[in-house]
Image: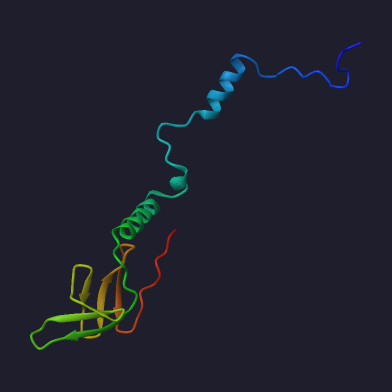
Amino acid sequence: MRPFACCPSPAPSVLTGPAVLVAVLLLTATPADAEPSGRLFHTPEERQHLDRLLDNAASGRAQPERLDGIITRGDGRTTLILDGHPRPPAADLRPLDARSARILANDGQTHRLRVGERLPPLSVP
């Protein structure tokens, strides 16, 4: 009589020796040019767009939401009112005329806004 008759004997392993080694190598192998999986399913253009969004967010540059007004003084200098705060013209913010301005958004796109209009929300593909 066997000492532990109630317990069946373990089944023999199907993969042994070299077969196990080959299986492990195949499962862990990745192509040399593989990208991280977080960006794998985006086109190069979408990845550049995401990089621009992340760079702008990391720089701490707040994106204005609305153009409240444009003030032109007698000496010709202009001040733009964005979100209730005065700002001088800059590379990313230029008045076009007395009622509109061109604003470079954090997504890298330039928008023409009339006084009272808002920038469209940032979109991530």
